[in-house]
Image (cartoon, rainbow, N blue to C red; front, top):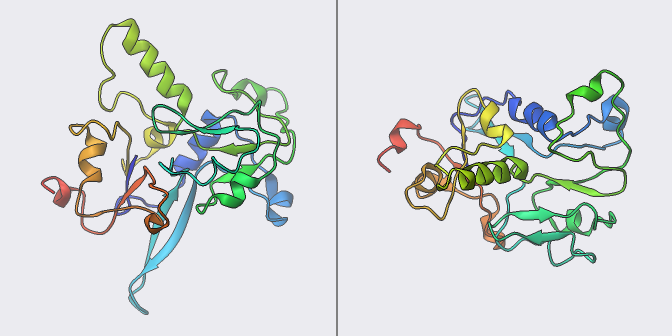
Length: 229
């Protein structure tokens, strides 16, 4: 995934879409006051420039799908694992909620499900049937909407073709009104995501830790200036 920070306005449409797509309950005001959160993606604020010429910028932070993920080797039940597609998978049926993975994650993108969510009728009809409703006592994380990835792969296989670039979009990418997010195959040098990841504006969050994150952020400049980068 590539995220252009110049395009992000901090509207948090990606956060709302992620909640709706992945059956993530909102914790409510009381739980938030106890420092409890439940977001698979969040929008961080940061500032550029010096007073009085300070500009507020925004940074969406999903799971970085690290190539050398610190969360994987610490899991005692192997619930956290690396898929053949390079994602940090999570087997919820194995997870026992030790929180070791959350402590090991430098990006703070894993959350402990501390209560059983209840959707009163008719709100239960809004739940996505393609995604399980997780129960209390497990760790939750972004999966780049793996259910959409698998659905796209199955559809392409049924039509006896390869998955087209841009055909699969996680909920956050689809909902972004400024098209700040691009999702694609980084192993394909011709894909839009791969091309943007090679831009001279490309940076990675806490890359110095050696986690090899697969989310690339584009700093400064403009989208159009990057076309020939």
